[in-house]
Image (cartoon, rainbow, N blue to C red; front, side):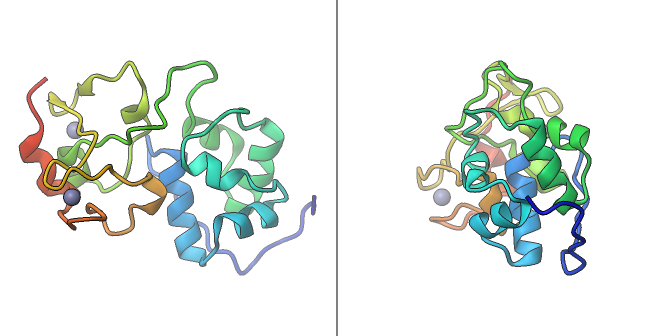
Length: 167
Ligand SMILES: [Zn+2]
Ligand SMILES: [Zn+2]
């Protein structure tokens, strides 16, 4: 691992409160034009980034991996930990879920949508969507939510609120 080497060409971005690591890593990679493998290589943590972006957290990200990544991203360990489930908490890697009403207010994927125990959005009293109801496509992983719409039919996530039942 390369220690304390400054990477001045990398642009930092601010994590958003409640944002999932997958969504944050996607934003960071696009900003810096990095592939998953390039980011893992720069951080010295190998090929884990692509798995983490898919919510595959087994084996669970170690402090050492997260600190190496955080140094590169300019984000501290506790902030990265908050973008991940607490070890042992039930998390679904599939389907990716969405509250369209939340997305309209602030366009990012919330970690809490992936908890098994989350039945709906408490803020809007709406059930979460687990696919695009317009074309039946699965929602892509949050790391790829660049355009904020269904990858197949291009319906904006915010417009999907009409299919969310009250909760
Ligand atoms: Zn909501
Ligand atoms: Zn669609």
